[in-house]
Image 1 (cartoon, rainbow, N blue to C red):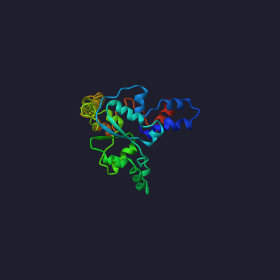
Image 2: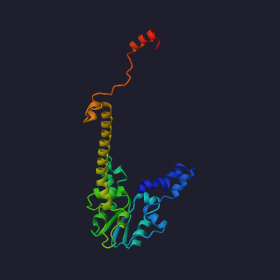
Image 3: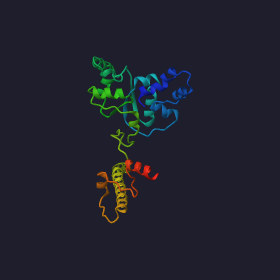
Image 4: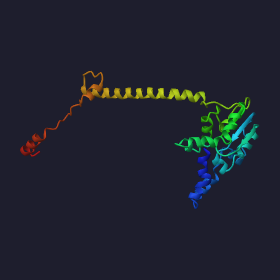
Amino acid sequence: MEPSCLAVFKDELTKMLPHDDDARRLAANSYHFAEFFEAFDIQPPRLSGRALLWGHCHQRATGGIETNQRLLEKSGMTVENLSGGCCGLAGSWGFEDGKYGISLDCGEQALLPAVRDADLDLLVIADGFSCKTQIADAGTKRTALHTGQVLAASAEDGKAPGKPRPPVARRILRTVAPVLGIVAAAWGLGRGLGSVSKCARSVLGSQTVTSAWPLLSSGWRPASPNPRPPARARGHLVRKHGL
């Protein structure tokens, strides 16, 4: 979960609902990505290489970035934990009118120069969406990765994965399922029209019915075997015969 979103549960929720037991339980069971590995003693996959690590401001305030550094080092990577202010974007703040320049000035205090000067074989890691966006849009020519993306990398070459692709079986199912659905719907429609056609044949006797749809769409309905006389005629019969 985005560090700024998780901070709601870890810090703000119990302040808004100080007497709510559920709020306290939720706060106690909320973890940043690397914190979860430490809390439940999960062994990360083996990796190699070097990384430049940048922490989101909300994560620094609600647990710290040191857990990310320990997790990556435990996987076998050499990590430089970069510090020095904020990336400058601060959610949508840096996109607002009149604030773009200030946003970049904040990023130039530490983050952006360090990313520009980093060797190309050095992975840039930032779990915050705002931080990753600032790095990508500030002309650094680098793309930051989430810690989870790095842990999912190949242990053999240490390269971060590209866009995730679902298994072949799932891709085939996604392609075939809509086609099967269309075929099933067409088959069901055909059976339904066949039943209507049989019903029409039974009503019309020897008449050949090639399609019930033209009859139904034109407003045709089978005649009643015992048609009732019009209302005026019914009144006459009641007066004359007492029916």
